[in-house]
Amino acid sequence: MKTVGFIGTGNMGSALARAAAKSKAADRILLSNRSPEKAQRLAAEIGAEASDNRTVAAKSDVLFIGVKPQMLEEMVSGIHDVLDAREDRFFIVSMVAGKDLSFLKDLYGGKPVIRIMPNIPVAAGSGVTLFTASEEVSTEEKEFFKRLLAASGTVSEIEERLLDAATGITGCGPAYAAMFIEALADGAVACGLPRRQAVEYAALMLKGTSELLLESGEHPGALKDRVCSPGGSTIQGVRSLEKSAFRAAVMNAVIAAWEKEF
Ligand SMILES: NC(=O)c1ccc[n+]([C@@H]2O[C@H](COP(=O)([O-])OP(=O)(O)OC[C@H]3O[C@@H](n4cnc5c(N)ncnc54)[C@H](OP(=O)(O)O)[C@@H]3O)[C@@H](O)[C@H]2O)c1
Image 1 (tube, rainbow, N blue to C red):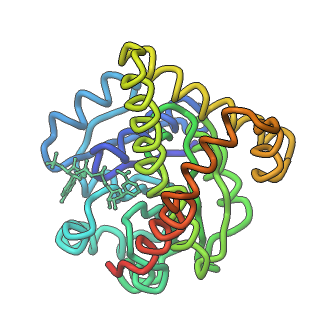
Image 2 (image 1 turned 180 degrees about the horizontal axis):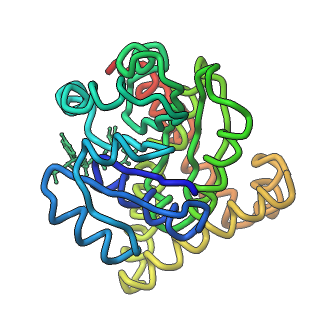
């Protein structure tokens, strides 16, 4: 009998709670949120129970924390005694950006913690959730955690020292990918294609190219070469992108996000 709880059911908390409900790995899902209507609405939608922070903290075998970083310490001060008083086995899953394992272990009094970095496409079941676990988390607990989030997309363990670099792609990347899609569509609109079709074709093209690369394991540069026929139109587009330092701009975006301190 496994109970999974979520404190903070905003954008990301609710996306992961939906995935947990879909996976059917938990027997019971408890939700709480500062404005209770949000948790109540979500509970009705996914077949969970709306509750309050202290009950969720007391009853959950896996406790997801989905509040904003600046609200974390205040929220934890309201449940600290409940967590301290527990003698049963449970672990915490923190999605709070920028809060590392050593901070989280101190904050939660040394309880086992998994730190995760999900991304926006989890809401469509195609996300990437990176995770790193404190040494107190057992292999079985990690396996259960992965099963819980299986419906959210890929769940991948990573060393904590590499998490920020990977987040520069998985966490921030959806913004860059959306900008790329928007820019492709703008270009096609300038050439006369209606906006709706332009956005749809650009997004499908990006999805298809990603699927092809993941399926084949081909180097991205080799795929680019296959599309560029000698004397053709694509190599002229590539020339134009190179002139605008496209690849340097993208590399710098990833590095800029990595350099930003919380
Ligand atoms: N969004 C992303 O793409 C993303 C990606 C990776 C990580 N994250 C992390 O996920 C966390 C949530 O982000 P978000 O985008 O989902 O933010 P959000 O939509 O603002 O959700 C935060 C939720 O926490 C609730 N909350 C605040 N204080 C609370 C308290 N004391 N007790 C219970 N609930 C409380 C808020 O309730 P109200 O409705 O009353 O405001 C809100 O629903 C953040 O730590 C963020 O770093 C987000």
